Length: 505
Image (cartoon, one colour):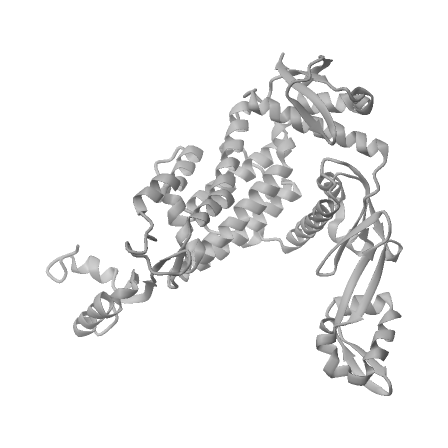
């Protein structure tokens, strides 16, 4: 307390009026009103520039909490179970603080899995390899022009996030802040950048590529720890002090975004690839083919080649396909079935609805593309002019035999889902690698430990994976694959029961 007006007048004047006041909705006629009356009486102005009103905390069904209903959330038990920062982050995540908040414990689990887990896993991954390599990214100087494209993509996403978060903090809208942080940390940083760059961390040489991935990850983690500090003070403090060896994140300056690092062309390129991969994985799920089972080819519209550029190999890796084919004419692989949307067209076309149905059977690919892009077609039916748009039609795409298609916002991807024996056997080998890696993890082996693999199967497993033995050994750091006749605790490799064990060399 400043004990104004009896002392500290200069300090008080420098901080008056306050940027904002935050109280519950019950203070509208109490604290808010009292302060403004006194301030206007003494100073002739409002004592605060912004009023942030916290609305009521309700149960998950939107009912007021009360002991008689038994729907009260005990705060200290909840904090002990999930952590204070999880609760702090969850509250603005559900809705803006000035609207009633429906408190649901499942939401706490959601923010923990979508934000805290990927953030802390990213830090742990970074810390583990930095210690193994004995590197300190603070000593690296990697110029922006020497970064790889995926590094520039992450810095663009990060700086765009920081700009948005800064503006949202200025608006006192923490809901916008936490929602944007979840998308960046979970989707962009953890599930894409770190996952895509693991091999750069694992590289034996500390070359420019390895320095760049360490430096980019470090800078983003430090920036994030500062960005989240006002909302999650404990997690941010832990991250920041470990990363920087400085006293406290709460004594650091809030980060400033660099507009020159925001590159929308790089973002469009990478985001298009990610959207295509998402569509491709959805196809695999629909036809029940695992990502570890390789496919022969993926077919894309040739116009995407200029956008995607040199990221073709990335699509091959992520979708586990042998070849990416860019095709001018996708009609080789798909058929269109176009009918009127009768709910929309009934009143507009009336007696000409049959003529419209016949007309749509012969619609050209060029006209279909125009409609998909939001354009309007001018047509004449039974001597009358009409304007046709996408909302008037039911457009369905059917794949030809052996192919499956994914479409979203006029983005096409076609997978050849025909499996040959060679592809099936490679899928078994990749599944074996996955099981071995899980066994390594379960036995708490170090990531650098070399191993022996022991296996047995009544099926002729060896002949199926014979062409992939070197690949299996390389991926699992295996010195030898040994057949051992045991049948207990078998695991399933794409339909084959196999005994499997590993031993550290």
